[in-house]
Length: 329
Image (cartoon, rainbow, N blue to C red; front, side, top):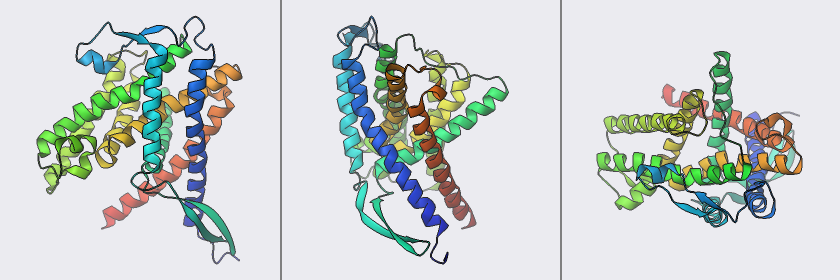
């Protein structure tokens, strides 16, 4: 009866099924975010018609300050930009969805809607899920030593959502393209195509032949990640020292994704972390009167979190298997 049962295939299918559910949640968040900003009063005395200071770290680095812009128009710019990138990664380098596939479990044949594990969105979801699990573990360990991560300012949900939405694009341009892509391009020098293409997708457009160059790449990614983690505390945001560890780990994930899969994939990873999760926090806050700072009271956020945790554990298991195979070789 159990002859045809393959545990590895079962978990792979389970992973892809939950990943598909996460794809639905992520897609819906795009529309929920638009609705919350333009058709609700989550900002109370502040609405999308008001002007907001553009206190972005990217602008601050270049000493550009005292800029104000209409909240709604600026949000719409970021919203549209992420929507386009999201649509792009669904089909890059090949489509996320394949035709139906058939697999046998317990001597019975089941039909599955195929999901391609080489797709950039699939990769971003898998890596974010692993990061999500590790982030929870790091927070738990730090709390044992009374080291707090802190929380972003939530005085006004609309204002918080505005800055959280803007962060992925601003921070990925600054930390990945400028602070990581440019140094890698200057050091590696040998491009397969142009400098612009290399800054967009370093791993695909540079020639790395020696082990010393690979070690140097890893070192630069690590330093970039540490600076990324440090910036979350040094440059405000109401975070505490524990955030450095969590954000540094996030920087390692983002740095590797940027190098291996390109800037679009790292932006989508960052966008899921910021925009998508915060949207469902706002949905619970607005429609079900749950707390923005207490995730356990928001059943939607709990469902998504459990899905990320399950996918993250399976993704980490796969990664561990690959590392062990590499070590044995």
